[in-house]
Length: 317
Image 1: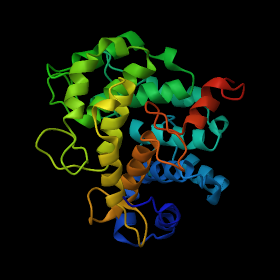
Image 2 (image 1 turned 45 degrees about the vertical axis):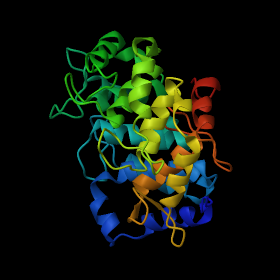
Image 3 (image 1 turned 120 degrees about the vertical axis):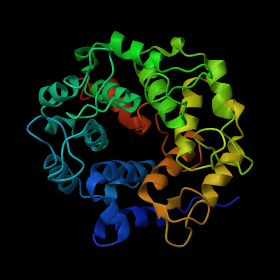
Image 4 (image 1 turned 90 degrees about the horizontal axis):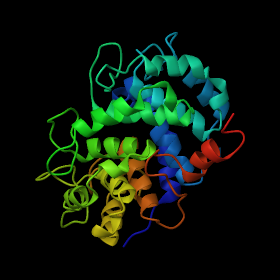
């Protein structure tokens, strides 16, 4: 089995931000806030967050905030709950949550809850269980979870549960590992995991492991490194992670590295990107790979950051 090319991954992450005219930068221009979260969290898990100019990142991040309180994916882009969570997570990494007006941000987030307990992603109204997780995660980090109707939010998530134990994006939607992470994560944060059939869901999730050791997102699909996070974190939250082969999954993730230039791809020998690099490294962290900081499976942030938010005087201000 190979080893994690830590230094090369660090150089790759730092180089992505510097290059503005290559394909990856162009296609990610509209979701740069997400890219910042993926890249910076990867650096933190690798123990290299000090390589970044904090003031420069925070200044850019705050320039992406709208008068509504929400954040856009980049300067001049419309606000969306997806980018708002990434902004809050990045500020949490840097211990800089004090730079935002919490009331303003939470007011924007709370305005997105619908009568049935679901959440829209922005003013245009698309509903998805991803947004339920994002709202619950974001408000929890800001110590403002009581500002939404949590009971209705949980009830809506449970209405998206399927007979196979999984969850879809809306009621009746096909079970998918990404949606399952969002629903299980939201239920974990709200203390509602007792509403999940852990054995049934655990069985569906462990069947996502294929011969190569990788995990797919639903039946009959190819494995993808990103599911090393979506599936694995869900299994950990429901205490069923021992139902898959950790060793085979570690090998699969390491096989997806570009050992020359850094970065991790979806599958071996494909092009690398920041998204898969983050989820590959985060997956290895969940698997307790040596040399990585531990990551929290519900908040998708380093454990020390989560502990700082919830268990220190500074975090409780």
